[in-house]
Image: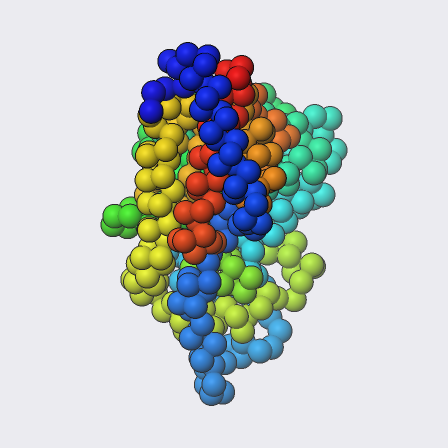
Length: 424
């Protein structure tokens, strides 16, 4: 098949007519397939169902002399703090363990900055005349919505294969109204990029005009390889301290895609001073997070090495799904020269760049057939992709046979929208 731009007008019309027949046949199947969110599939959830066989004896409800069924320990069980510290390569006293969602901890951090100010804030953010936040894009839509909901002006920072464009970041932080930046440093959402050593060191060494500038370091996929060996990652907390910015970063992680998304545990990690400050504010808000679940995870995951063994089992489930997506795109789309995509080795997404001006149309066509994708534009601040090009593919939820059908639909819709853009 020739590239669409190299076809004659008659050839493109003939191709579109063929695709329209294919599309109508797919629509007649009454599909209901979902590739919108990075949800673990049933096979992954089944991997960890045995964790509920734990905690059958009274002794298992005691951790470091603490009865986990009772009040107390706002910062989390010491054993759970040690577990996350080992995973993130930081110190346990730098870790606070929360409930099932790291997003809740992220939202709460921004909220506390807004209502009370953070440790180095001259005043609460709500008293600032102007608030701005840096958003590497394509990026995670839920991050953007958090800061948007508090009235921040969202500033787009271009993403590169090495992470955010650090020249743009370093220029932007000269503005004292810029209070922070969102980062997904390992297997970024949605591109699947790993920040380079240079990017990480430049990030840690930033000299922002705002004394309370905050790096929100969402290390959601810190051990989530599905191809190849585990990739070690630098401790951003230590690097910030070495660069003279000990309180500039909050790091987040969770077991959402390790154990159970709706019943896991999460953490924030930062300087001891930041953790003490946040813990003091949290002590007014809550008595403690769910320590029974924290203990269950400590007993089940044990340590980093044992957790990585579990992640290898997840990789065996996820790898074939990602290969199915990439293989189909390589086979169906590459010869047509109408799109390109990332080839991640970890994380939960494939980032697809359709012909500019066609992402929304592709999304609409898929929806009409019964295939749900993340909304076109969602990976950019305010949901506005200036090129109308990026689509985030989440292969994790459907079984492979359903995924192959969904990708067939996506390829058909990509072709149709590209031909429409070319004027058939």
